[in-house]
Length: 355
Image (cartoon, rainbow, N blue to C red; front, side, top):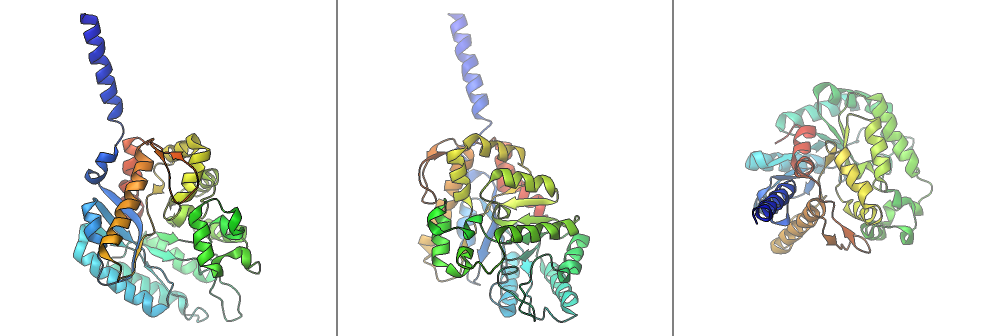
């Protein structure tokens, strides 16, 4: 009888010990988390209320997508939010390309960046309009490896400020809608045909976009670079691994690419889980949620919470899940606590030197 009793105690201990290595759904609100890729485009933001309720800090990205005046306006809005919420809020700045053909463009841009850093910005963002929209005086598309950028990126490396890059688009952007695997890609490119490169073969190819980025990184080995949206290599964790091995000063965020992770998890669960564990120091959680002002507060908060909770379930449990982002079922990754902590918080603090 004593032996049976001791065995029961032993099994109970082993169960508790094993279970303590992982978080559960119930731990969601008690664990510190950071959304490392968020957007706020209003000076009357309601995002922080829900973020604090769900124990999230926000790293908000400023993007050059609406002219120089909008870049400056957004910077001042984010600086104000940073001053208000302090330890729970950080942000990046960006720069515009107006005056690109002026010989003083790089010097002026560096001056703008330095002022933004002095105001509190922790990083600098470049967007997909480089390589896909903006042209020089000769109507040639400006690519991210253009020598005109060299002094700007060298300056960032010298002062230790990361460059955040959304360069190119998902590989699916160069495919017909019906061949895309992630529903979020289908929806986005259906609604944004001007960015659907399958319809615009006159623009650089997917590989040309990736090659330009890689040449830029090769020229700037001391530059810390965070590749947004799984570095536009969302279609393959194998390709993400090759990229991270090649560029040790790079990390990647997973904003707006959970659908791509979900379908790979559905098809090759252990490969994706192994990838997260091997590269646990290089992956940042983010959503790409954007608050533009005027949203219904209750429904917007619901969207924030549901997105964060879905992704928490995916990373901390092995539950069978479904998502509108893909077709079919998949199981969560059930990553160890130490990996979850890095992906959800520690890596953002380290790579952005923030919070």
